[in-house]
Image (tube, rainbow, N blue to C red):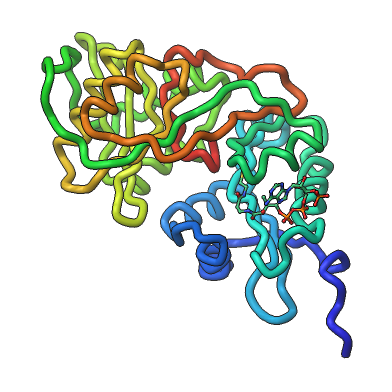
Length: 288
Ligand SMILES: CC(C)(COP(=O)(O)OP(=O)(O)OC[C@H]1O[C@@H](n2cnc3c(N)ncnc32)[C@H](O)[C@@H]1OP(=O)(O)O)[C@@H](O)C(=O)NCCC(=O)NCCS
């Protein structure tokens, strides 16, 4: 039987059973396997992929929907990957067109790598912000951050969800409610009885990823990062919106190094909803 052309292969929904093939695809493109993250995204979001008749996946991506279940008001696209052996044959374009049409009128957002940006621009996505990926061991020092933090308790979840929805601009309960199980640490910043910020740190390969990082102001964000860093031996990784210049400068003074820049792009909406001034880092660039 002749091998079907890659352009004719069907696009199907992925499930958590596709985890290993997804991680293999990441590895194929020189990305880390990130199985913990793939598992979250394939469970809380909707995966799409193309099977390779020779085994494994030709391509994959994941959509995470926010807002009311039956009528999401924002969808985040992430983990857009095409196997190296099938690169530059129009597969990425076909997969993305499928997603744009499958999501109908729901506004879309994604973090684009320099590799992915030309394709998204061609499809009509516009850059609305940028983020800088930092990584490295966190070196304590400098003035002690002034905002009190503590481990989140089960009864904080309601307040965390309310604060998150206000700052993110739409409800993302399916993702945030998984944080206590998904992350190694979930901490809140408090002003008296009030929760004024929260942050998670979750395991990814040899690092702890700090995100989401939601905080009333930069001082609160610094306090949360410092408190998370003080409770792990691993290097940190985070993706900070570059408008938060003060936090970026401070993180670099504390030993984190810039490793990549991504463009935050949108489709069907001029700006992301919510309040960027209190949104310092996404949970992951793959889900916003
Ligand atoms: C980005 C990626 C998904 C594109 O998939 P693809 O199937 O190779 O892309 P297509 O063949 O559909 O190309 C669509 C357009 O994207 C652009 N493009 C794709 N790969 C490119 C590259 N390496 N450099 C510059 N532009 C590129 C081109 O404009 C291309 O159109 P053209 O071939 O007609 O010039 C793929 O290169 C990939 O998996 N990269 C690694 C992971 C990654 O960075 N993903 C993006 C995350 S945001």
